[in-house]
Length: 426
Image 1 (cartoon, one colour):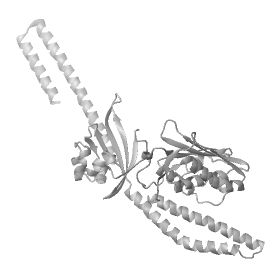
Image 2 (cartoon, helix red, strand yellow; image 1 turned 180 degrees about the vertical axis):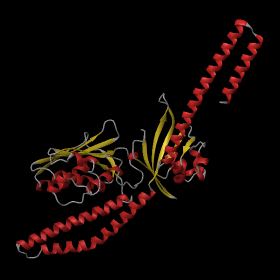
Image 3 (cartoon, helix red, strand yellow; image 1 turned 120 degrees about the vertical axis):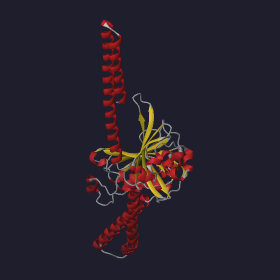
Image 4 (tube, one colour; image 1 turned 90 degrees about the vertical axis):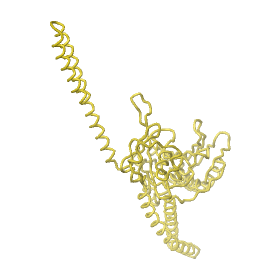
């Protein structure tokens, strides 16, 4: 604005000088030219001032929005120099914004104690425990970072910032502190664990008593009552074991032992174990193995057995008489994964239930009508076992036509998460 007044003063001075030194037409031409220039300068500067005001308003609005977000916000350019560091980021990363803004970070920055946590968030490969929640090569990218000293659980979402030419000019990280959430989850899991362990002993006594009664000379009505008791006791024991498994999963201590296995042979063995229950429900089970026969993967065979047993059990029990179950395994051509599917010709799942199928304690209404027993924990456990193996699971279904569960397992052991972390429900 000062420049505008200076230019107007010079124009006015020029007009006075032209009036004094020039005469006639030249004086009017010179004065007209200076007036035109002065007018243009005034309006250009006025427009510039209005633009600056608008930019300041937009900047203030953006700063207010960033300040009001409940998550940490860190923005840095392509040289890893921080340009935005909101108050929540200060609290989570324990670094004042004044110390972080303007700093350029590199892998060497981890050597500075005050910037160690910030450096690990910017360069997640330096963090002690990392689990990727999305494809590492795409944006936005989501990952969970876990720290032991101090105890900290962070979910970090990273996205690119681009200009009008679609060129990357920087990155934004949204940091969510999940430490309290995880601690509450752990407290809940601890309660479930204690309660489940307390139920184990009396359940064992009840089961032993009922099994002993089955061997006694009983009339038919008494035998029916004992059989009902044995079945109920068995179902309750399974529920207790499922609760213990969920508790361990959510605390990240389910315990895995990965070894190289032949997937085709493994699936064949699981299917042979399922044959008795398939005959009981009058369901035919078929296996379509991978091309080439043997397919070696790294997996925990005990945990993977839980997955297949659960999916097969559901496919058989919720099928129709003389129905079919087809288990297929195939290596994906364009990805380092093998895909396994379990397809049935059963009752199907309503579309509105599909999104809730892998959550804890959920059981579809049509399923409960056919099989009243069940905890609704099986598929939740299945999902977490598959994800711990580095795979994904999903389902397709058509009501009264059948259901197909698909899951993937990596053929490259490097794609298996390095450490068992807390998964929780997402």
